[in-house]
Image (cartoon, rainbow, N blue to C red; front, side, top):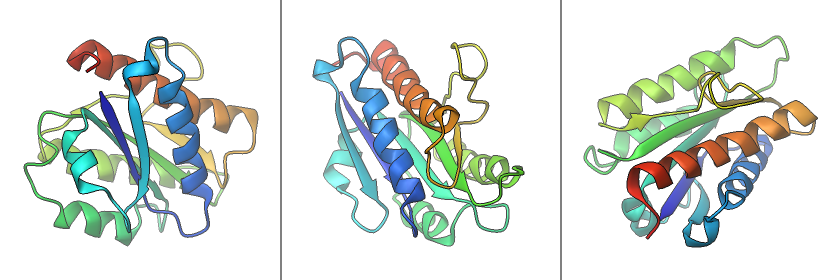
Amino acid sequence: MDISIIYYSRTGNTAKMAELIAQGCESVPGAAGVRVKAMSVEDVDMAFLQGSSAVIFGSPTHGANLSWQMKRFLEELDQDLLAGKLGAVFASQNWPGGGGASFAEMSIISSLLVRGMLIYSGGLSVGEPPLHFGAVSHRAPEDELSISRCIKLGQNIANKASELFGVN
C-alpha cells in the first residue's frame, strides 16, 4: 500500500512535518507493506500519487489560509485522481495564537471532498494527542506536542488506509 504526502514548504517547517508524518506511517505494526513518499508540490511523482491509497496534504498558513502554491497544485490536479482515496491534512503556522491553521486545513479538506476523497484524522477518538482536523505545528515541529501530532497523524492514516484498503 502506498501513501503520498504532498506539501508546500518555503522555510522548511512544513517539510519537517511531512518527514515526521512519514515516520508515523512507517511505524505502525505491519508497516513492512507500506511505502511512503513525501513530495513537495514542486516535485510530485505522479505515478506514485496515482497508485497511492492515501494522500496527506500539508501547507504553511498564509493569511489564515493555505499557500497559493498548494491551492494551485490542487486546482491543476486531474479532478479524478483523488477520488476514493483516503485523505488527510496538516498545516504549519507562524503565529502561536492559532486559528489560521484550522482555516487552512478546512480549505484543503473542502477541496479534497469535492474531489471525492474520504477524509480522516482520527480526531479526538484515537488516543492522544487529539488531532481535530489534522496535525498543526507552530513553525517547525520541535516541541513534544507538535512532533507527536505529526507522528500520530501518520500512524492514524496508515492504520485507517490498511483497514480500508489492505496492504498490497
